[in-house]
Length: 142
Image 1 (tube, rainbow, N blue to C red):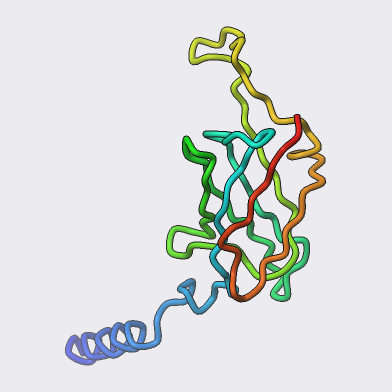
Image 2: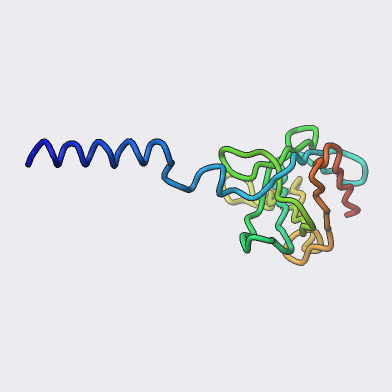
């Protein structure tokens, strides 16, 4: 009886290892690389969050991709911990930089707060083709 149980468990374990448990890369939608710069009046906008939110998705999954700009305003989107890029198709782009207060909660006189027309009520869009976007820049006019 014990040998039969051990054999069954071994077969079940091997089957799971061969077939996989789901949730892997096969379940992910098609993504393409997206990178570029976020500028403010032609100058880099450092340490801003940029998010590409799919407008529609064939598989019903509307998972966004995001990144943080570096000191030069450059970004490269990440879909999840295993995939770089964004899903294919049309996206609403949201850019946020909240520096209204310093680390102590005091008002920051040098703060740059991105207007709502670039985030919560974004007017920005991008279409991600299968080849990706390697130079998708946004120059904000505030």
